[in-house]
Amino acid sequence: SSQPSGKNRMISTILLWCCILRAGANNVSCAEPASFLQVRSPGAACIPRITIVEAKFIQDGVEVLPLGGNYVIKAQPYYPPTKVVRANAKSMVAGVARMQYRPSDGRKVVPVVRLSSFFEGAMPEEGVFDPHWQSGLEATLAAFADEGVYVLLDIHQDALATTNGGEGLPWWMTAKMQETAGSVPNCSDCASNDSYITTP
Image (tube, rainbow, N blue to C red; front, top):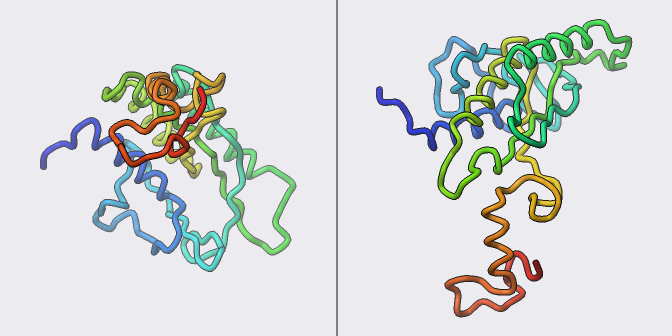
């Protein structure tokens, strides 16, 4: 079969890993043929999918409690070396095993991270996807999966972008928004307040 393009591969990676915890899905065996929503990042281990059923997190038919924290680097290279991610993941799993907290209702605790994904890292220049950023994302996802840590992929931003003193969207995109503030390009029927940004 032909290999997907870099752009399609990146989009697939983000969509597929967003669906590790997704509502309405059926449990999927790792041995079953992969469909669009069952593909994993290259090299990633297969860990049981968690689904949401009637507002409960279910893993292999048993209710679980995802517990963890943020994993966010707000500047290049956006993702640390794989050996660092793997060491962090091992520490998270060990922490869950030795912690004193246990849910009173008997639910099993599973480790989870909220992993940042910055559009400014994915597309630093208009129309150009960064393969190094993509490789870092895929390696990070694979390392967490290998150690049994679930990932919630967070398309992250703070104050929208660097043009506003934060991070998230690429500089070129928000600079263009500011250049067209108070107007909607190529839309003769749009009012000035239809603009996404009305003041720079």
